[in-house]
Length: 268
Image 1 (cartoon, one colour):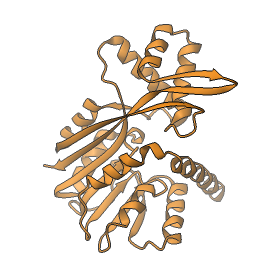
Image 2: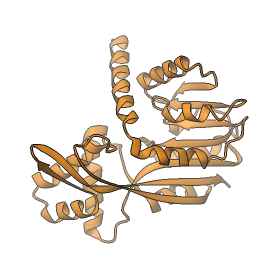
Image 3: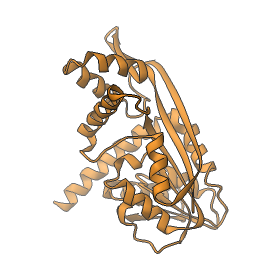
């Protein structure tokens, strides 16, 4: 049974990695995230929610005398990350199975930490951020890249944000959550970090097919849920502020935008 579960996890990790490799629209943001870490050759970097190692492997190239430690709770993800590191002959990428809410490291051992598309998967993001603060050295830098929702201006905006979260939870479970920029900054500040910068990047789409849109099927699910529940006003707002899905010649056409925030914070 354990072998079967591990095999299924591994196949899921392979599918995830293939999808991630086609998300070229995020490449500039990924490199901006890495640049923001201000790496030195001997730094020790913690990659939280490392997944299949996409981010950690890129960072390793910049640390000839340092190392990246990737931590993730998924066995299949870690197995694939190890295989990729071995295939590329990378020896300074260490992988650990565990959760962000209870990091198995001593205090003050990392020069910096990074998170890419991770916060919304944490079961307890407040505790995870405190743990990141604990394991960083004094003046250690934390840099994250995450999708963000619009700041709500009224009750209707709040309900739209809830509807978006609900659709994503259908795929990822009840603990999945989105943040606004203000919520992310508050999360960092409450853990003891000083916000150094916050860059919000809007990526626009006008294409046929969902391929290449990060989390595209889930954004489409938001539309389907609102349409099915006949929440006409919310659906109109969603199409204006996020994505409009139509059908042209039997193919889905997508027009809209999504926002990602790169937050850099220093351990106070």
